[in-house]
Image (cartoon, rainbow, N blue to C red; front, side, top):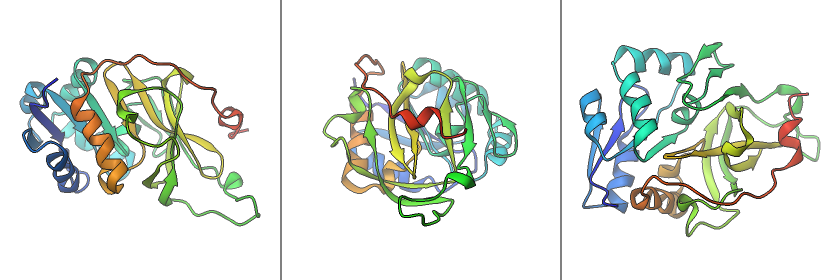
Length: 232
């Protein structure tokens, strides 16, 4: 499938230039557009939905710019990549500000619970979770091609998704418990980490997205047992 036009959704939250530059690097023939225009999102062949900041602010700005409907439509019909807040906004609700998300995917977004933020040696872990962390894919998906099963990606976040359907989980990471850090459903793939800041493995993931036709089918491996019990 040709890369064609790639829309990077700009709703005023975060510096999107690094995302666009990384996409241009892996696909120099593609037309990469940072856009606030819903019509450009609708006309694009594939859509990247990044963002940084607080969930309530992101949802408010997405609606104020008129991009909300275009983003939801894109997530239903064309290759779609969510990054960081762009992952979290796809779910139904976030604990950050007690705000509703786009409800493209079932589930909620939770803050790392303070009582659980202790490593194996009893040392307190910081929130936000910031830095390089290993990512463990649990499905065979085109976006994981050429990426080691324990590759390190760059994270900056205080919240993580808890999908309502375990079948949505595409990968997990550990901080200190296992949490969902990537999801996949049909033409949608979304990650909590920042591929544009993750050097070679991040560029490989973006290159895989460019080559992806938006179809998904693959087998899964068992999830860690502590993913279901961490909030207890």
